[in-house]
Length: 199
Image (cartoon, rainbow, N blue to C red):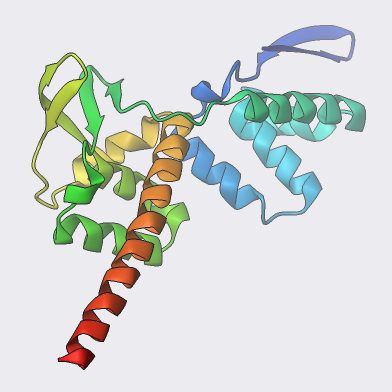
């Protein structure tokens, strides 16, 4: 989307993201941290991340102009889809979401849990690097990903450029699974305890 700004009789055009898919994981994490700021500071920072407008010019925008742009940003957020794309491409390489979360290894689960405890804001790219891995083989909708070895630093750094929409859909899918798993695990443990007591 184009934003036209007139200053001292001169018009200049700047770019605002066209869709939520234009927002990278790195930008999204910044946007999340801005929610802790005052509404004025948040608007300034959001515009600095989602437009190519210089911060000095953003500070000089009229309140009505800022409100209009922020309204458009809000509309873009509402338009986004929360449907998991299991395969995505980044820098010419295909990555696949873990094809069966029930088969997560203890190491994968422990690493995700550790990253979550250390804070999602700073570790989102690491969590994505555990859940998405290079595809080794693919046929139709079936694929095989690299085995997990814990060496995710390089991939995690690349994943800062992945789409925020992709990240959000993966998190919704993963947390839904984690809720079901923890409920099932709790039920299983209670049944096991009851069985042990009866023996």
